[in-house]
Image (cartoon, rainbow, N blue to C red; front, side, top):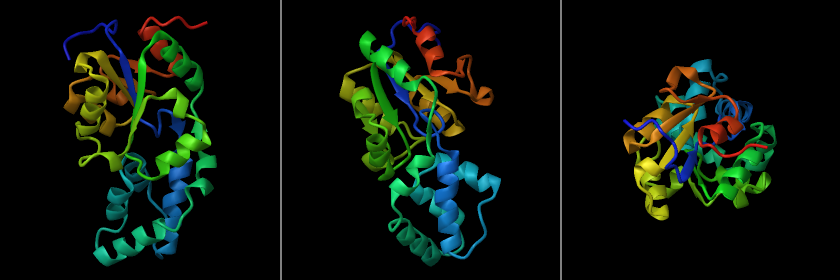
Length: 215
């Protein structure tokens, strides 16, 4: 995008894992249980990085690429796991709720675009986040999950916004690709490797970019 200012921003779209939460341990535990149940070794670092960004269906195909039958069995095992056993491993990012509250007071809409599926409801319930967001779009709500632009378009349409009125806060290349595909401004969270001029390390930093008073 050519514009550099953020004064017209009316909506902040957040990724979930790695932005709202430090959930790497959660995902590592979850998928390693799947691997162990299927009799294969624990995930490599490359595999952990992949499953941390992709949908559960994509992750299962990535972890079990050689046998569709094995993949189906792994997916069936996933359906027996209770998300509530893993959610306590998630750690909310510092100052998140304060930042969301200030955005709400300023009248700036908040939405989530995540490649999580059924587990997102458990996350929202466990951390009492429903009142902080107007809209949550998971991979189940669209035909094409991130990095496709469909979810962002769905959010913009629901709020009757133009692309220049939204920003996307993410921590991964998938998030950056999503923002690029939707042609909305991208803000990198704690990942300078994917930053395009806008990088924050704390959620309150976003408020300062948007000129929202932080007390």
